Length: 309
Image (cartoon, rainbow, N blue to C red; front, side, top):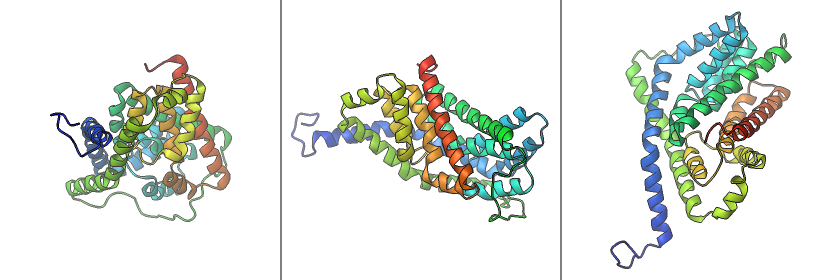
């Protein structure tokens, strides 16, 4: 039946599904558009600056400050991992400190300005906790490289010989900004639409009891399950936000959500193949293991101390 009491030829589930999609879209679209704008702006105006600052971080005498700066710059970088490879090659071939480059790589894969702003759809506390953990992951990863691989080469950039500066040569920054925004919108819109649709389908068809059994028990098992589904199910930083938002409204813990948001981007296929291009096999395996272990540990700790209610 429809609202005015007449017979509807559209099944109730379809009507409800369309309603949920509309609600999700209204709640999320502003965060998505703002995230696109911020990412496009940084890409147009700050690409060269980020490159220069990462190199300066490598020259700092105090390692922790350098790692923290590199990790923050990684969070600020809106460049995709494939687009970042030439930048990383330039840095490494310029003898930048490997631990500093590692901190930059880890954080930039886990988060970027667009994803950070989009994460506010999950709540302010979740967004800032996600940012803090991604930066912390980069710092710790850089420390491990500094202590365990000092004096050893862990990257292979032989196939990426770039002698010129990677700065944006387009003098018309406003045109570049507009093009970056349009390109990002075209690339992410299908993923956002898919995420909203999957979230609505989940609310309509997924048994609530099954979800409570998996994620509602408050144990470490829910975090482990979040890590396991983060590996195959994470397809886009922004596109998964509607799904995570729905899961959390159904009882998913903050720790499990954070684990999904850390292990997911680290094990996303496109990111893995890009990282593998500059890492030998053994280094790549250790890199993957580190991200998964960090994501699980972060989720368990967050739930244990109940830092996000």
